[in-house]
Length: 630
Image 1 (spheres, one colour):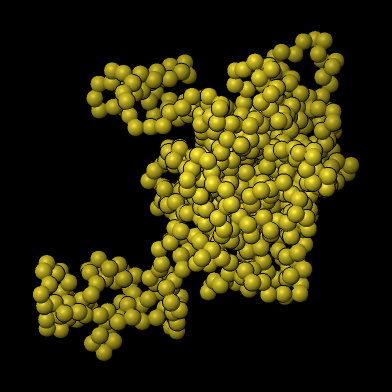
Image 2 (spheres, one colour; image 1 turned 180 degrees about the vertical axis):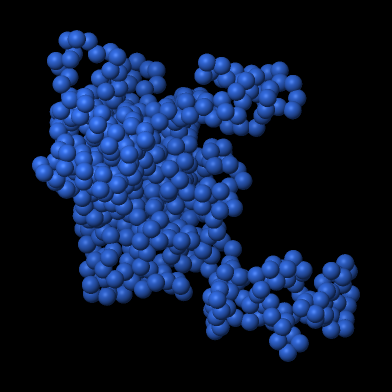
């Protein structure tokens, strides 16, 4: 019989998980679920440990608190907003409103090791940015002055001016805790791109080295964001900055290869069971006057170089091709079977400038114009906007883009979502996006506010709607686009299956009353007040999405309602889950669930007539699937 469990309905506490792992590895260093850190340090050291030794690392005020925060659990949920979504029933894209740290925490089970690429354009800490932060100790008056907005939990944005005594520390804490959680979402062959400028690039590189490992650093792309010099000089800096950076890290340096451009046009006119190839003669070169090159004279399939000659390639390369049977002998000559993946490739040129290719890289100016044209207004409250061409360039350099998930948790104007849809339309791909953005209020005096955009999320969602409609029109009219990427292996334009929809989800407090989490605190008086542990204003869809988060199920799966003799069931795509959120469940519904044999089933704890019915029904279902109750 499989286990019947009660869902926790909160994000996992990673500290407890880490303690359990350490207990398995070093049981003598853990007592009463507490770690003896001095003993653990000694276990992991080859010499006697006496004290905290100095070592190379970046520290700041608040770092330990951020690490603790990244590991702690939260009782929150994501509530679906069907009316604000586009094609809610079928789309695989997500737009999530709320504090990106808490959203990342909520996604940590459903998208663990599932994200192919993360791109973020966070605040640059210029002294003018708003930075999201927790309640650091300060007076109420100072607190009120510092915030621009707050949510129900008292979290807020504050303007991090360079007069703040914790100017760098606050920004580092904000980034550190988010990157710690985000790393777990990346696939083993995943990659993260982070836009940044001179203000914090040095500090960001250090915390990324710590979070992702300095051995997984790919490189630092310099992007020329401006085509023209500014009219005024920065009083503190005699240099005019025209560039920004894109720090690039892999989850695992050995698990991903970028799609780099092949040098020249190659014709693969032959094929075998492994695919297409072309022959390339294994050439010789003069051996006269060469020193230490005797290792270049050896037989290949019984053929030696001619007198006073040596092979141009070493034995390691030859052995590699021999192992895959890709060397052949023809008329006393030897040839490689060269396949597309063997071709010489250009290394990244890490300076991306409009001077070399304006259409491929774009500028902040073209990005701003693009947003204005998409929204049909110049007033959108964004002074700097990344162009879709830049994000498409990053997307192009990833292999195996089909069905991959792209995450941007500083979504801003939703350039990344626009770029994903655009590139899918051009190469027939099926990339999916997850956008996360705090609903930061627009200035009431701004034209964006007057136009009806009360917060940044409203701008982002409208951009996706309009961009999707425009792309659909372009496909229908087969109108050529100047920015089409010339990819030799590209598939044809999307044939009409392009996903231009998105599910809107909004961060909110849990759907459950406090008694759900602390039933032991229930008094006799509370029994009459808590006839149900679910908040009254919450819907079945609200509950379903919190269940999906708790069970680690992707939030983009198609949901199909089905009614069986008056009992409504929710069936998730791929037979992933069946949920019954009714106050009563019919025997016919139980039999239907048994017949369908989903991977998991979730029921309300109080949907049975009595305890006997509950025990019998749960045991019956547990014989074919995993059963959970809420």
